[in-house]
Amino acid sequence: MYGWIWRHLPGNVWVRILISTVLVVGVVFLLFQYVFPWAEPMLPFNDVTVDGAAAPAAGTAPGGLV
Amino acid sequence: MSDGKRESAARAADQGETAETAEEEGGPGPETSGAEASGKGATRTDATGPGTTGPEATGSPEAEPGEGGAEGSEGGAGDSGGGAAGGAEPAGKPEPARKPAPARRGRIAAAVGILGELLITAGLVLALFVVYSLWWTNVLADRQAEKRGDRVREHWAADRGPGDLDTRDGIGFLHVPSMSSDDILVMKGTDPKELNQGIAGYYTEPVKSALPQDQSGNFSLAAHRDGHGAKFHRIDKIDKGDPIVFETKNTWYVYKVFKTLPQTSKYNVDVLDPVPKGSGATKRGRYITLTTCTPVYTSKYRYIVWGELVRTEDVDEDRTPPAELR
Image (cartoon, rainbow over the protein chains, first blue to last red):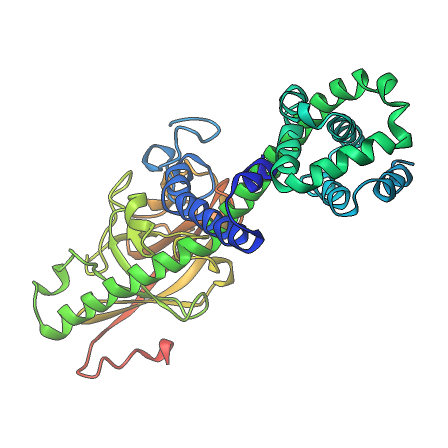
């Protein structure tokens, strides 16, 4: 997969390294900006209030809704 | 063994091209020796018949075509050399017997290689998620909280808004010296969108919080333990007797912690009652309750700290903090 991408990038090694870096940064940006904020409320790590019903992750929390 | 073969092949064939092929083989993945062997097979057949490079390459398993293609494009001049060397190559003999098995193994090897890369990618994404939730959300939340806090203080300084009831940007600041040297902005509500901005919120549900200025009741707050500012991260450092000070526009409310509950169910809403259950308090009074999740990095249980109002102090012109904060 990565080898395939690498072989299909244009230019010499340095240009490829540059393009790869840009691609990696782009992917990290998309993850941080859109994917993680979307996924976070569904994960049971950041639920700070008492009462599951008022909490964001109530649906996914073990034990379900109160 | 394959190394030795490769060396002899390198000696026999055109130096530059074979070295490149070897690099290509080592580069994309040391997946398995199967891939290597079949890759070699493909290279060899190329060498014996330069004209068949195209179809041969597409016929061989996925990982290989690139190699063949790269070879073809890079070694335009080398190809004929390879052809000549192939004719002279002594290792051409064992090839026909080996050929069918490596092709199948090569396909499996390629699949395993792709699976491996996907798993590595998944691992990296999960690691990035940890970085995101424990570091990046803090950066964002602290930035936002600071901006909002500044706005509240500006409002106070400009004497706009209806005094203690100015709740749009926040009702005041929480100071807990034993937990954190920051002042924590407090806003209405425990909606995660708000709490994610690096603030503490007072409960509006399931049990409506009292406000500090109320003559009796429980001022109940929640904030994040990790990520999003992690304002209550060190809540476990609060001991019985420690001060909690709430600052509003005109008043310092000085509370004293009288009970901590290191672990309780997240469904235990009684801790928010006007006379909080489990705190040991029996009669109505002016209480403060801090809630967050515990243990750190999870939301399995809730950590509760209760305090009771000791005294209030009017804010003077310099906003001199009460003795507990000095």
